[in-house]
Image 1 (cartoon, rainbow, N blue to C red):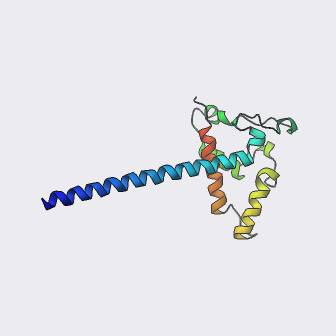
Image 2 (image 1 turned 135 degrees about the vertical axis):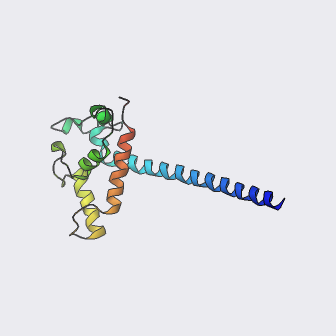
Image 3 (image 1 turned 180 degrees about the vertical axis):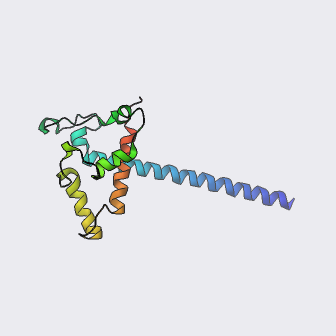
Length: 147
């Protein structure tokens, strides 16, 4: 009798822990997605458009039309190249139409934040900047059209 009571209590506790953990994970995913979307809307949408199709409000001011970000996977054999996208956004790899890392939309703002966080001698993005870029990369992944 006592063994059944203990087993039932343990089973109930495990179930409650699993439910709580799942809810936390879902909340974290929502927060993560919100960060990526915010980064996109603040830094990319003026050129690439709110939906990422290359129809932002600055299109007419640009020398070259921005690419349709919803086609990245399609152009890559149906696979979203997460590392390549991260490297392009972070400046490891360059996109000619994005200019230098000092361009106002990306580099300058992030570079100023890095200097504030870790000092002027830092050679790479700080953890919080890397996290924000990664959240943006994940968000762009959600914009992909089915191949």
